[in-house]
Image (cartoon, rainbow over all chains, first blue to last red; front, side):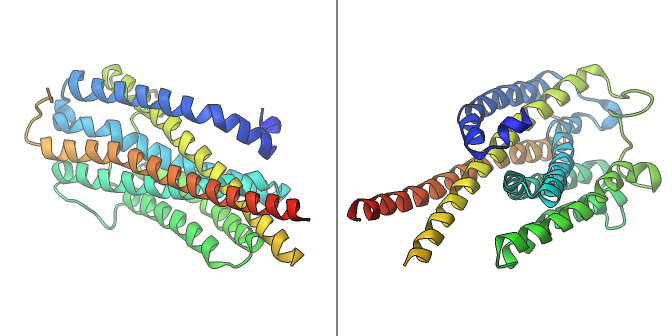
Length: 243
Length: 55
């Protein structure tokens, strides 16, 4: 499948039907999970009552921002090693979506922190700081690419930054295990199995699935836009070269 | 129509509101980017077609 989609023409043909399906299916699943999470799930007295419902937005946004960064680093690696242009297009498309979801994770976490911890922000918390670093990595990637003149130099510098920055992802994941943190420990992906009741886990996983589909549709749309921009740039260069 | 929550209702609705608003805004942004790039490409294609016809 990857070999098939690595051709830009085949990718554009795939994107034409995949984007509406991903948007439609993702919206239905996300809306259904929110309905279940807000209307039907009981409050959790152990977690501060109704505030647990914020989890159906905050936790998927945290998983998504880490997943998007891994996607950015893998695409950068593929471009760096094999110089595959579509991988660079994917990296460029992932960056703004990843930055937005990291910001969502930070802001919703801050809002959740106020009633739970009694504060909006803690500067020496390892989980909050490592996610903040992830946000700066996304912003740094976008800024670095915009600052360099040629596409090749921008892609090369961006790829190096993205590959080095991947070290931050395991730091985010294990920060609550290694250092003392206000943030609660992992409750879904654990060696001993999930600590969360199924009544909360099901809508949480469906919210994540719905948002994965929506985010995939956004990334593919931005990839289409980037491919069209590159085609237009090549036509302009040909035209200027012919004059 | 809307569920009633405890004293933290404002925090919950703020989180949910942001969680719904972000994908909507990003969808609008991606669609605008796509339309602009497609319009630019079509403009260059029509110029190129005209130039080819002239020659």
